Image (cartoon, rainbow, N blue to C red; front, side):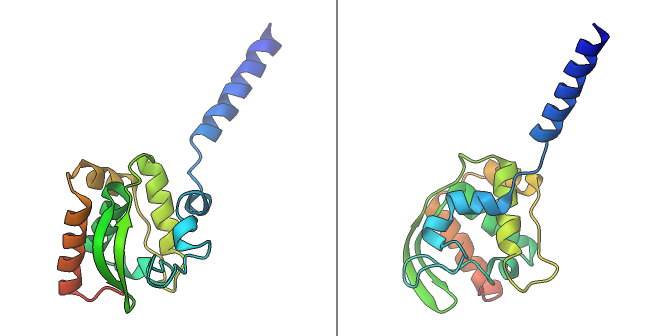
Length: 153
């Protein structure tokens, strides 16, 4: 009986540890983002902006981090200029993902550049973005305001 209880406790402890493991941002990026932004986050000229070497720079300010969290939780529509490339389109919301997953994706993408140390995103930052009621067009307006304060890469 003691052996059965000890075995059950060990299995429960391992299950809880696995359940609490942080999501793998790179794997989540590959599954959710790479089809458009490419596996190496280099994007596709004229269609999908490069994320590599850009997200970490945008995330260097609190406003930039809020904007990026808004993009993933609310989507983005309209025309943007990204690293000199004009793009007009629509990025869907990834609100179906958990706050933990979105934070992991943004942290992983921010680390794909030369901004050191790479900014990281918290679950609280994603939850705050999710609590805002924004349309994809409003997120684009947020981008324009941010770009007016300091030029986005």
